[in-house]
Each structure stands twice: as structure tokens, then as C-alpha cells.
Length: 310
Length: 310
Image (cartoon, rainbow over all chains, first blue to last red; front, top):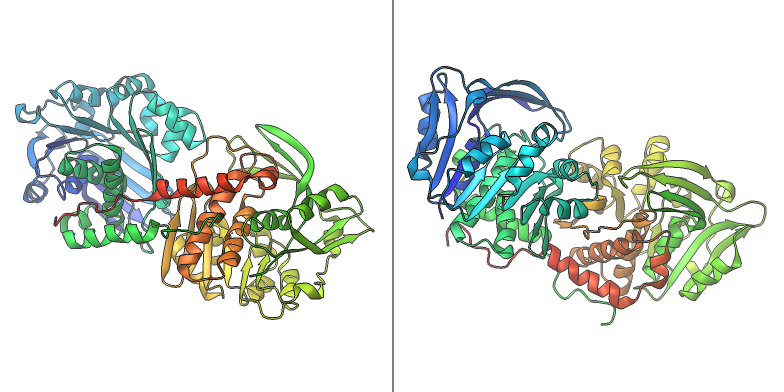
């Protein structure tokens, strides 16, 4: 199935206790498409960049087979810029700068060739913009959405409106608690699914991910990593891997969703091992497959666990 | 294999957003033994109670088949008392009162019949007392230890000394980070295992548990619960279920350890559904077995996940 990702293409400046990277390629649409292209043949990107965005970055995405007909260049401004600093405990980060630049006036206008996209991935953006995208897609099979605390707090009505049209919501545990107003994640999941999304994935960072799909609840572990150099983009990579796997298999039942969670988790576990999307650009398929097999090892309960009555 | 649990038998006063329970039966040795007795035939308890401890509680433990030859009554004082209040987010609690009472002068003196115990469970106590217990056991097959931030901070040397004689350390993620001085749990695990314990279990509450045993890393999910009424005793119940399963199977290899983590998790998931050890007193074996089966459902990655090369 064809896959469309709408989000940001950005410059990121990232500081972690392990180093610093200045104005490197970033943005939700970058990570989502670079992750999805491991699985899906047709990966379409819709985003805006400014006059300062180098052609070399465009070439780099094109070389990975990503359809860039929807990559808009706005010559009147600069590319979206984000700077952040991670603490020694990488679960905590400070945003040092957010310059919306050309993103401030971005209104998605999908190329005609994108309108038949089957899986639509809406990266973290103003929910009004996410809605504008949906209005331009003919009949998506699956709409996958990411959001963040900023939109939950500042545009709750717009977010609720778009959620009614979403099939899969992928957020982290803090966001799930905030969106639902409920600290218990099982209750939070029920409340959130009542808002629209049939399927909910709650990302828990180092603790893995929870999938609620149909009657299914699935708990995926996180791959235990010793060296996390930069968590930037891990969530978007998860989303891209998740949606990409579904696009590849052409199925969206709960069993396929479980597989998609594992694929997203495996891919995200690589991204955090280097700064920026470096790993997504160069990762061999064999390495990804090996890590997926490690997920089985990590989570398999021995068969035939002797029960009390035996 | 025979199992010995040394720890506290206590009165607990517990407040949660869901209710209040006053001076109910509690203590680490209570939870550990009541959990272990689901699996192990020979479960021995060593702890001290005061003059105020009712015979009805003693009868209740005896009726569950627990060997109480090591339950010492100190007529000169009152039973250890703890009072705590849990917040709406049950991960947070305030200790309202800790009255050591007879525990302040407790020096374990094991009955001769306990000295051949094969699995020794050292509940959260002063590490010097934990060491005194070990000195009185002839040749334990497996020593399992719990501790807490208080001992990590206040008696680090005594804790290090006893850790050298421990086979399995079971602590939570915050304790693992504090003990190792390392926020990354994989690195923390390596540092802690270098202190003595071959096997380490890191409990992560609602996020499940991580097992490091030999070359094995295993991630067990937590059972997704909507109604958590009282987290008190969950960790001790986990330990009792874990050690009890190993006592029953008579094996301590990494595969058995994985099973033990699932058994401990399943049993702990019941305990938190009611105040105090209520569930451990009345839980039918069938209910426990059903929950263990739910753990398979919850964590099984579909077999034959289509990889990229297929």
C-alpha cells in the first residue's frame, strides 16, 4: 500500500552528554519516511523547507526512494529549526530554541499524485494542518497520527476533531495521561479510544510500548541498549516503521499491528545509537532483521511453563 | 526445595484514593511466604512480632501451611508498624509513620530445623541482619535479596558485603540506578552484577520487569490493570512468587528464572487489586493459572513475522 507522511523537515541542533550536532537534517517527516522506506515501496513526503535547505539533503532523501513531489520549498523564509539539550538521564530534555520559520505559514497542498495514498501518517503538527491533509486524501485505508503536549494543552478542540478521523494514535505515556486526564494507562487507553482512534499505541521509551487494537492488548519490550547517544527522532522512526510494515503487508488486523509495533521498536532502537537520522540512512536490512529476532528472545516466555495443577 | 523467608511481619495502615485500611497484617515476610506457598511445599518464616500481635493472624499464616517455628514473639514491645499514603498516581507514596518497635532489636536466631533451607529469601532489612541470617544457613542453593534506598544510602558498606553472597538481587529501577550510580539500566545491571549477584531482576512497576541471568536478558510485561487499589506488598509478593516457583521446579537456570519472573508478576498483579495480602489468602490456583496464560497473550510476538528478505 502507498504511504504518505506529512510533517516537518527541519534542521536540528542537538546536545547530549555524548556530543553535539549542529544544524543536522531532522524533522518528523524526515524520520517517518526514512523509516517507512525500509518496508514500503511507495513512500510520499509532504512538508515545507526554506531557502536555506541544501539540495544535498534533498538528494539524500530521493536516493532512498522517497517521493518528494510534495516537498515544498518556500523561498521567502528559512527552514524550521529546533535546538535541544538532553540530560545525562536521556528521558529529560530542554528545548533551547524553536524557530518555526516557513512552518508558521505552511498550508498543505497535496500533489494530485498523493491523493490516492492508502496509509496517511500525520506527524506532530498543528491539528488544524493535520485536518487539512485529511481533507485532501481521497479514501485512506488507515490514518496514523502523532501529537504532543503542546497541542493537547493549546488546541484541544482541534485535536479532538481530527482524532475522530484517526485510526491509529501513537503517543507517549505522559501524553496519554494528559490527553485522557487519567494516570492509569489502561483506563487512559479506553478514554482515548472513545475519542476516535480504534487503535492506540502508547510509547514508553526504555520501557517499550503498549498496543491496544480491537480486543488485543500487546506489550512490546524496548531493546536494552547500553549506548543511547541521541533520542531525537525515535518516536517518528517508530511511527514510520510501524506504518511502513502495515503498508508492506497490506493488512491492519491486530496481529499485523503487533508485528508493526515490533518493527517500529526495532528500527527506533537503532536510531538512538547515533546522532540524527544517520542510522536510518545506512542501516543494512540484515541488521534490522537480526534485531527483530532479538525481540523474540527478549520477550518469549518459555513454552509449557509448569502450572500449579501439573 | 525448601524455602526460608526472613523479613518483617507488621501492622500496616494504608491510605489510597480508593480507601483506607487500619493496622492490617503486612510486612515483607508475610507477603513473601504467602506468595511462595502457592508453589513450594516447605515455606519457613523467620521474623519478630510484639505482644500486640493477635493469635488470629498467626493462625491465618499457619493455615496456609507456613512453617512458623521461626516466628519470634518479643513480649517486651509492639509489632513493627508502618503507615503510608498513596497518591492518585499510585507510583507515588508518602510514609506517614514507621515505628520499628520490636524490630529495632531483632537479631535473627534461626531454629535448627531451618538451617538446611535451600532457597533463602532475605526481605528488605538492615543488611547486617541479612548477613546474620546467611551465617546461620548451612549451604543454601540460592540466596535472593531485596533492599531499598534507605540501606543503599545509609549502610552502603554492609550492603556491599552481603551482596557478595547473594545469587539473585530483586530491586526496582530507581534502586538499581541509585545502587549503581548509572541511569542506563543495562549499564546499571552490569555494574550491580559485578558486586556479586549473578542474577538481577529490576522491577519497573506498571512497566513490568527485566531479568538479567547468565547471558539472558528477559523483559516481562506487567499485567495491564484498571483497578489498582493498594500497591503495598507487590514487590514482596513478586519475590515470593519468583523464589517459590524456583523452589517448586528445583531448577535455577535462566529459562526457569524467566518462568519465575512471570509467576512473580502474575501473583503481584492480584495483590494490588485489594488492600493488604487479602488476595494471597483467598486466590484460587485456577485464577493464577489463567493470569499466567494472559501473560503469554500479552507478550507473544506473532510467529513468522515477515522479515525484509522474505
